[in-house]
Length: 137
Image 1 (cartoon, rainbow, N blue to C red):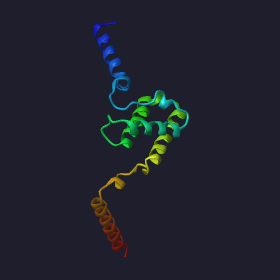
Image 2: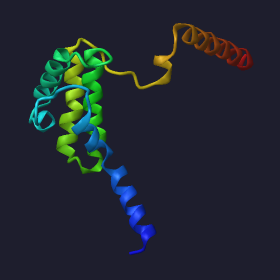
Image 3: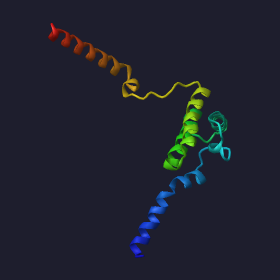
Image 4: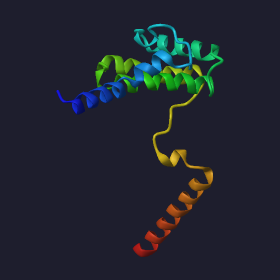
């Protein structure tokens, strides 16, 4: 193995494990050990909520911190997560939203647009309908 390939291998392995370092050395929230290995989505969500509500070291709201940790775990698992584990963790997101009284995240950009943008969009679509109707007559 050449010196260059050893260096590349070392750089790759340090980049490949950044998420493990974050989990070990992060000063974010103290989570119960094995929280992401719990069997039920509700148990995962309840544990995250309890940890997030109790933590004073978070920078955002308890809901955002808990959801962020859950997303981090899902993304960190990547393709190594089994379909069952991914399903449980995805369901834990829904449970977390229920526990905090939040609705599901919108998927479309239109639903995230400001009221002013939505009003413009509606008027543009109304104008387009009128133009189409005129051409049809």
